[in-house]
Figure 1 (cartoon, rainbow, N blue to C red):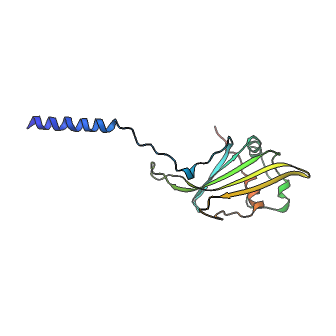
Figure 2 (tube, helix red, strand yellow):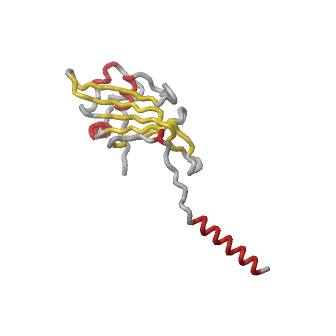
Figure 3 (cartoon, rainbow, N blue to C red):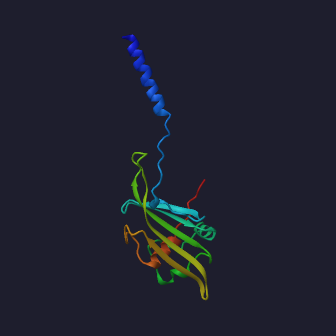
Length: 169
């Protein structure tokens, strides 16, 4: 009786040991969640609980320098016809605002992670004849359309320019 109990215990210990030696399951991100930042810097990030989205604003060196300076002329959500001339970054600045859906994190209870890529908004500033020229493009993933609280190109450009750089310690 005692021998069978010891053999059962040893066989169970060996089974657990062999199970622990297997390679752990590695999670890989879905291809639709990956964004190639093309060497741009993270300027800031934010999320919207109402629309269940998360956004990250990327930019090159000129965009990062612009986001690090105070811009009292910009107020998010207020776009006026003359706002494009106030606080425009130097020519060569590139901003990319990337928005993902939020989904529950399967590895951490109560937290969210980025889901499917929703849109990529690109604002580029170039030298124009009468001053800096601002170009705006938006690429949608086709999953959702028009889920932004702010609409219109001028308002979106103003919103992107008004973002302050996050301070990293």
